[in-house]
Image 1: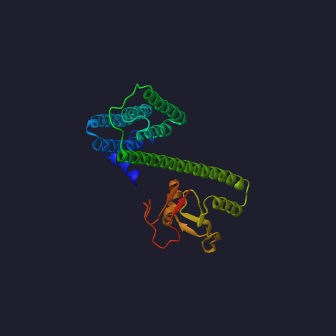
Image 2: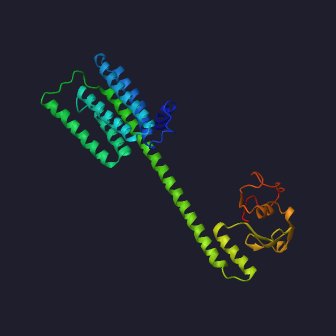
Image 3: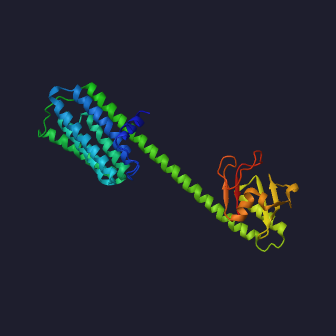
Length: 319
């Protein structure tokens, strides 16, 4: 709930639904934006007075970089926005540890955010590259300090400030994991639906082929209808199945075959009905347009709605 709140709070201002950028980019930018502003602001206000201007400068720089990256993302340039975010995280973190106590500064852990974001946005090679870059930066800061090239004008972060910093970083990492999990789940759901759709299409094509083979060269009408019902049952398993015959320009339709729950409905076999009284069946025959009705009591129908109490609620019709 708490990482999701960070992701949603900035969507009031930055609506990325129309941007067309990758799904991960804008949520990650928002996940980093809110804690950056809140955390750095708290650190600036709780720290020594002489260091507040520096902390606020770092806060403004990081916030401006993230907002600019969001705007670039909305223009569709995802890689530029991702690069701006990553190098801003790297630069602000390096400036922070070079100003406040060096490598022992808890802010060094912020490099992990840059590495994780690089992996999520740009792939494993970028993550490995940023891991090497961050390691090199830490080595450089430590090396400069040992040679006396680097001095720290401000006091190191105290225990409470370290707690604030770690809490904020933990929250950012939780938000990034939430973003990654949501994206993976969505991708798996899309892949599953695509696979199920391909399987359905394959079953339909197979059934059509088997139906064509089954009904070919069958001279006897009754056997032909029986084979047709068998093939249709394998494909959609209808509760009720009927084959209606009519003559061109005829006034009557005949129920050549009626099956209900897998058994012939003998009282309906051979029944003749006037075309004007055939309802949806007559409409399909006359229009020669396939019809699929999901709910006979609710869906719009091309003819008068049948009276309640029918034995079925949906109707696929092929003329």
